[in-house]
Length: 99
Image (tube, rainbow, N blue to C red):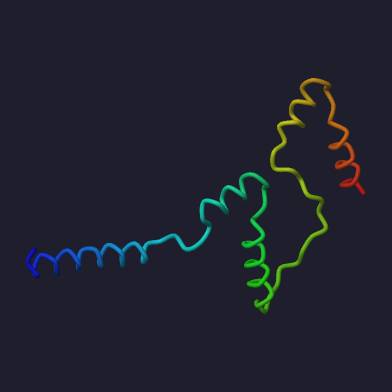
């Protein structure tokens, strides 16, 4: 091959590599999204990153003393449909909220 063609090919490869690096996804990769979907909370790496960012802020949000409510409540709907009342776990949750 002539040096002219080699130069063009080299420039094309260099351009593709540069654009790939520029447009690469920097955060929230597919593994972090999978962890979030499976466990309902951020991965330990993301949690550490969020805590570090929160520790470095001058204003911090107040945390509330609310009990955690599960995001997937299909069991509760099924239990109510079958037995006509809340599940035992939901009854405990409702009693704790009433206090």
